[in-house]
Length: 155
Image (cartoon, rainbow, N blue to C red; front, side):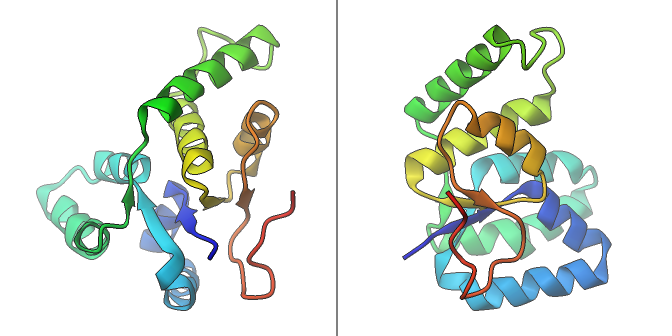
């Protein structure tokens, strides 16, 4: 069975736009048995939930259901280590500036390495960053929203 993780911006878009919320809900219903939440995504979403009320909403509506079902993916040591190697290799190749690394990119690299380690397919609109990461690490990612016919990303 293919297993999926959604990138942070998909949840953020859904919180801000009714049409995107409906698309996320439709995907979630169809793929719920295959859907996991990543700890990096939880961190990024909670970091943006600056009020206590919003934080409670995020925890109740998103985080708690995945936690109760044991469907939160947490990066292991190898993913952390590999993410550092990927960044170092990209800097060495001149693809990144060592002084200009965005925290969000560092999170993306950790998310990618962890998804690879766990055999998960990442669904994201942030194709540019993940294409760059994929030059150093074989990973599976795709744009939203897969259907039953299109649920396998291209290799």
